[in-house]
Image (cartoon, rainbow, N blue to C red; front, side, top):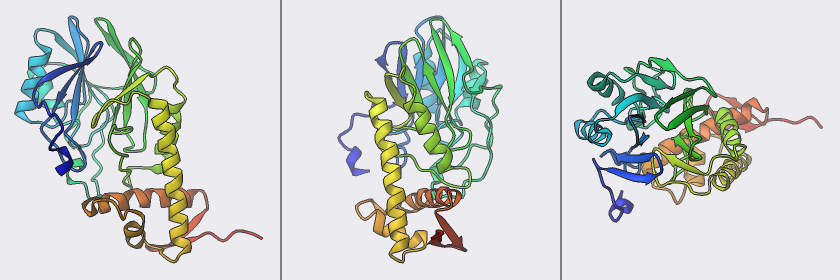
Length: 295
């Protein structure tokens, strides 16, 4: 967290960051959330949408309500149900009567190492948006773009009036996403990245953590390349005799804070499961081997 000392963190304040978009930063910084969860308020007219209301912290909820002012909250939208994203939906709904819409409910226990990212078992949407469905208000429209992978219920929201895309944790402005099985799925994650890459209409991404992404297709292309490079690293690690995730991670993440190694291990496992589906590796208990190929 030392890297965050010099970063401006206007917690509990609404900032105008783009046409139709304001940001409220939650006070929950961590090695996994960067400076904290960014809640976005969409719309400048009689009604607005709130995207990723964040953790159920009184200060943050009060800041959202202050930013909304006299406008009506037409929808509380959640990209997914990790506890740094959706828990404030319930108290915000209780205070305003606004419907909760967006991703499906998911109560799977997270068996990964991210205590801050366990699933929110209390999330109850009034409406689940399917891929391509829209909601709208005074001068704004949000389109659901299904992006499973980081979690099975992850959804992004496009704002066609400005070309903005709210990417939750699928694409972040400061780090790659953790993909943690059993709910996180690398096959789905890569397919969702390709799906976003093919959307030429999106000119800027607003992630839940980190700065805005001004060249989204360039970043997504690089992310896909990074994941393919990880695949090659994993195959080389197996070839070198490092057949377990525990043996691979210290070799592959030498320059990374070792507090993040357990999370990195989850993504390595997700890659291995994807490689197994593609018949490139096999496993016996926790030990992985290269698949035998026919001569």
